[in-house]
Image 1 (cartoon, one colour):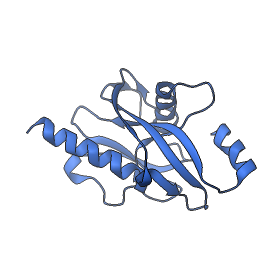
Image 2 (cartoon, rainbow, N blue to C red):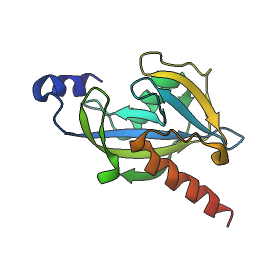
Image 3 (cartoon, rainbow, N blue to C red):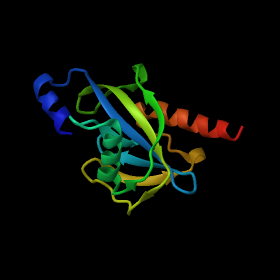
Image 4 (cartoon, rainbow, N blue to C red):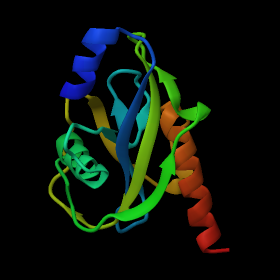
Length: 154
């Protein structure tokens, strides 16, 4: 997160438009991987902000590897998310206006490993048993995913 840290040193907590990527990591039992975030104690997607010179797909792969220890195979495009619902004020007062490219990944390798700097826990959840305390900027993405998955079987 070097780029965002550098910007924060210049502008403080003022709103920043931040491009980033997140991944809906789905296991063979169709469960969604979420992390309990250290900053707000809520469950959220695996992802983060883009660094200078990265593509969105590279950002997605890097964030998943850093935050979970998993290496992704193919990524499938899910959608681009932005707007009022993705504006978020972190517990430290920093405000971000997220623009997030979201991918799906169903094939991966590695052992789950929590990045203790960013998360408290990692867990796969059945779609019908997702935790209630979802991180606000991730909720619209997760809600759309759940709806699309349900419609797949309509």
